[in-house]
Amino acid sequence: MGVVLTERKKVIARQGSLRCLPPGCCDRLLSRLRLAKGRLCLMLGVSTAFGFLLASPGLSPGLLVVSAGVTLLAGGAATLNSLQEWRRDALMRRTGNRPLPRGELRPGQALGQSLALIAAGLLLLALSSGPQPFVAGLLALLLYNGVYTPLKERTLLAIVPGALCGSLPPVIGWLAAGGPLESPTVLLIMLLLVLWQIPHSWLVMLMYRDDDHARRMPNNMLHHLSEPVLRRLLVPWVAALAAAMALFCLPPVSPGGLIRATLLLPTAFLLVLFFGQTFFAFFRNDRVLFISLNAVFFFNMLVICGARVSLASSAGY
Image (cartoon, rainbow, N blue to C red; front, side, top):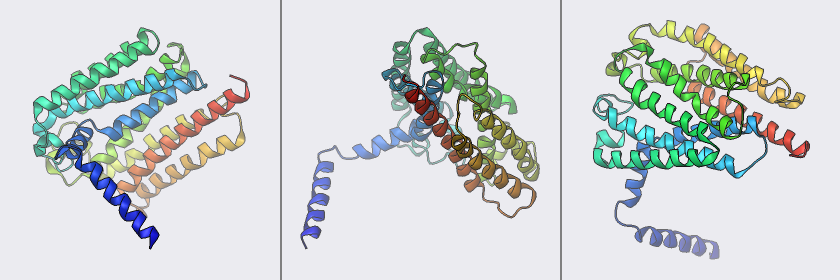
């Protein structure tokens, strides 16, 4: 009985705290978070930390500053992208529930949010460590909103600036940690992100293949290729991604056999999954493939970062 009363008091306390907020405040906050594509921004912040730890495996305040800067900048760019495309978003099933097409927020509110987040993100990057992270962040913003977004309605080649832009967050982290721009590791980091983004975007197209308006977009692969052909193309891209991940198993990134096994086993599982669904059709659930691709990719990132931090700690950083 006492436990029930305690739980009831907790519920009443939560309800009382929510009543202190203005009506609709929580809904507006959630709408603004969705407008900024919060989950995507968080992923980009994690990839920034990945690049930082590869260059400087010790934990430091600079890691938090540059990761927060990229997260805020990505939120501003995503908000601006939503503002640029909201009329077209209203026509497609995947994007029709976004805040601007639904009228949850006004375009002016989206513009204000975008400018505030971009300014905050660039400021943090400028404060992180020298001009290089700031310049790289500005380049990512220009590529995403100035090149990729307008090209999406015109050509399949929009994926090139899009993939390049998506590969920059870990490079920003690398530069903020003092990593040299001419290092081969920078190219490997960018290659890894590019190879992940291609199957990531193709799986989104396959998940929403019944959306006729989306299929008619010039940047949609299903506008140019049949579904079976696109599924077969996924396999070499995922195989290339697996090969790039395997390169991170080499010393000094992962000196131990256990770390290498932790990286390679999920990657091998991913390859089997994509190979099987493409050529044998024993499993064809695009959403599960999408989740598996992202989960293995970011799991491997965390393992590599953990290995680097552990190695630095044992070396007395």
